[in-house]
Length: 140
Image 1 (cartoon, rainbow, N blue to C red):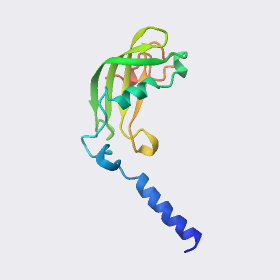
Image 2 (spheres, one colour):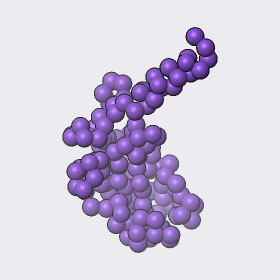
Image 3 (cartoon, rainbow, N blue to C red):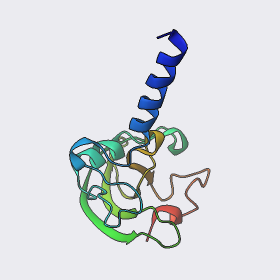
Image 4 (cartoon, helix red, strand yellow):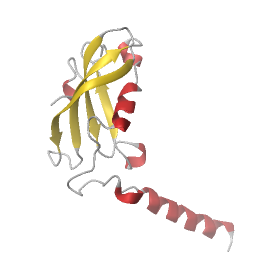
Protein backbone atom coordinates (compact mmCIF):
# COMPACT_ATOMS: atom_id res chain seq x y z
CA UNK A 1 0.00 0.00 0.00
CA UNK A 2 1.40 3.37 -0.96
CA UNK A 3 1.74 6.25 1.48
CA UNK A 4 -1.32 8.16 0.23
CA UNK A 5 -3.94 5.39 0.76
CA UNK A 6 -2.41 4.60 4.19
CA UNK A 7 -2.67 8.29 5.10
CA UNK A 8 -6.32 8.43 3.98
CA UNK A 9 -7.22 5.36 6.05
CA UNK A 10 -5.48 6.82 9.10
CA UNK A 11 -7.07 10.23 8.50
CA UNK A 12 -10.56 8.69 8.22
CA UNK A 13 -10.07 6.63 11.39
CA UNK A 14 -8.81 9.66 13.31
CA UNK A 15 -11.71 11.85 12.16
CA UNK A 16 -14.28 9.22 13.15
CA UNK A 17 -12.77 9.08 16.65
CA UNK A 18 -12.78 12.87 16.98
CA UNK A 19 -16.37 13.22 15.85
CA UNK A 20 -17.71 10.55 18.19
CA UNK A 21 -20.05 12.31 20.63
CA UNK A 22 -18.94 10.54 23.81
CA UNK A 23 -15.73 9.90 25.66
CA UNK A 24 -14.68 6.33 26.36
CA UNK A 25 -16.41 4.95 29.41
CA UNK A 26 -19.47 7.15 28.95
CA UNK A 27 -18.15 9.96 31.15
CA UNK A 28 -19.63 12.56 28.82
CA UNK A 29 -22.62 12.28 26.54
CA UNK A 30 -22.99 14.51 23.55
CA UNK A 31 -25.68 16.88 22.35
CA UNK A 32 -29.18 15.68 21.61
CA UNK A 33 -28.61 12.78 24.00
CA UNK A 34 -30.98 14.65 26.36
CA UNK A 35 -29.89 14.47 29.94
CA UNK A 36 -26.43 15.73 29.06
CA UNK A 37 -23.72 14.65 31.46
CA UNK A 38 -22.36 18.04 32.39
CA UNK A 39 -20.37 18.04 35.62
CA UNK A 40 -21.91 19.53 38.76
CA UNK A 41 -21.09 23.10 39.73
CA UNK A 42 -18.91 21.82 42.59
CA UNK A 43 -17.07 19.07 40.67
CA UNK A 44 -13.29 19.16 41.27
CA UNK A 45 -12.61 19.55 37.53
CA UNK A 46 -14.93 22.56 37.36
CA UNK A 47 -13.35 24.11 40.47
CA UNK A 48 -9.88 23.77 38.90
CA UNK A 49 -11.15 25.40 35.72
CA UNK A 50 -12.64 28.32 37.65
CA UNK A 51 -9.43 28.83 39.64
CA UNK A 52 -7.37 28.90 36.43
CA UNK A 53 -9.79 31.22 34.57
CA UNK A 54 -8.28 33.88 32.34
CA UNK A 55 -7.62 36.99 34.42
CA UNK A 56 -6.45 39.34 31.66
CA UNK A 57 -9.61 41.44 31.72
CA UNK A 58 -9.75 41.45 35.52
CA UNK A 59 -6.65 43.57 36.11
CA UNK A 60 -4.58 40.48 37.04
CA UNK A 61 -6.90 39.46 39.89
CA UNK A 62 -6.77 35.69 40.32
CA UNK A 63 -9.31 33.39 41.93
CA UNK A 64 -7.55 31.37 44.63
CA UNK A 65 -10.44 29.12 45.66
CA UNK A 66 -14.25 29.03 45.73
CA UNK A 67 -16.88 27.85 48.20
CA UNK A 68 -20.65 28.24 48.84
CA UNK A 69 -21.21 26.73 45.39
CA UNK A 70 -24.71 26.36 43.99
CA UNK A 71 -26.54 25.84 40.73
CA UNK A 72 -28.75 28.73 39.68
CA UNK A 73 -30.13 27.33 36.43
CA UNK A 74 -30.00 24.70 33.70
CA UNK A 75 -31.09 25.00 30.08
CA UNK A 76 -31.22 22.60 27.17
CA UNK A 77 -33.22 22.86 23.95
CA UNK A 78 -34.02 26.48 24.75
CA UNK A 79 -33.21 27.57 22.03
CA UNK A 80 -29.89 25.69 21.67
CA UNK A 81 -29.82 21.89 21.81
CA UNK A 82 -26.62 22.18 23.87
CA UNK A 83 -26.90 22.09 27.66
CA UNK A 84 -25.81 24.98 29.88
CA UNK A 85 -25.48 24.76 33.68
CA UNK A 86 -25.40 28.10 35.52
CA UNK A 87 -23.61 28.38 38.86
CA UNK A 88 -22.74 30.89 41.58
CA UNK A 89 -20.07 30.71 44.27
CA UNK A 90 -18.03 32.83 46.65
CA UNK A 91 -14.51 33.44 45.34
CA UNK A 92 -11.45 34.19 47.44
CA UNK A 93 -9.31 36.51 45.34
CA UNK A 94 -5.57 37.07 45.18
CA UNK A 95 -6.08 40.59 46.54
CA UNK A 96 -7.43 39.12 49.81
CA UNK A 97 -11.08 39.95 49.11
CA UNK A 98 -14.13 37.73 48.85
CA UNK A 99 -16.39 38.28 45.86
CA UNK A 100 -19.30 36.49 44.15
CA UNK A 101 -18.35 34.62 41.00
CA UNK A 102 -20.76 33.44 38.33
CA UNK A 103 -19.95 30.73 35.82
CA UNK A 104 -21.62 28.73 33.12
CA UNK A 105 -20.68 25.19 32.19
CA UNK A 106 -21.31 24.70 28.48
CA UNK A 107 -21.79 21.40 26.70
CA UNK A 108 -19.50 20.76 23.73
CA UNK A 109 -17.49 23.93 24.21
CA UNK A 110 -14.14 22.22 24.76
CA UNK A 111 -11.52 21.03 22.29
CA UNK A 112 -13.18 20.03 18.97
CA UNK A 113 -16.56 19.85 20.70
CA UNK A 114 -15.61 16.75 22.68
CA UNK A 115 -15.97 18.17 26.16
CA UNK A 116 -17.48 20.89 28.29
CA UNK A 117 -16.01 24.29 29.08
CA UNK A 118 -16.70 27.10 31.52
CA UNK A 119 -17.19 30.85 31.19
CA UNK A 120 -16.37 32.71 34.40
CA UNK A 121 -17.23 36.25 35.48
CA UNK A 122 -16.60 38.40 38.54
CA UNK A 123 -19.13 41.29 38.66
CA UNK A 124 -17.35 44.62 38.66
CA UNK A 125 -14.04 43.18 37.43
CA UNK A 126 -15.19 42.65 33.82
CA UNK A 127 -14.05 46.07 32.63
CA UNK A 128 -14.37 45.11 28.95
CA UNK A 129 -17.93 43.82 29.52
CA UNK A 130 -17.08 40.46 27.99
CA UNK A 131 -19.99 38.92 29.93
CA UNK A 132 -22.04 42.14 30.13
CA UNK A 133 -21.84 44.68 32.91
CA UNK A 134 -22.98 42.47 35.77
CA UNK A 135 -22.18 39.06 34.27
CA UNK A 136 -25.65 38.62 32.78
CA UNK A 137 -24.30 36.34 30.03
CA UNK A 138 -23.35 33.64 32.55
CA UNK A 139 -26.13 34.22 35.14
CA UNK A 140 -29.58 32.70 35.46
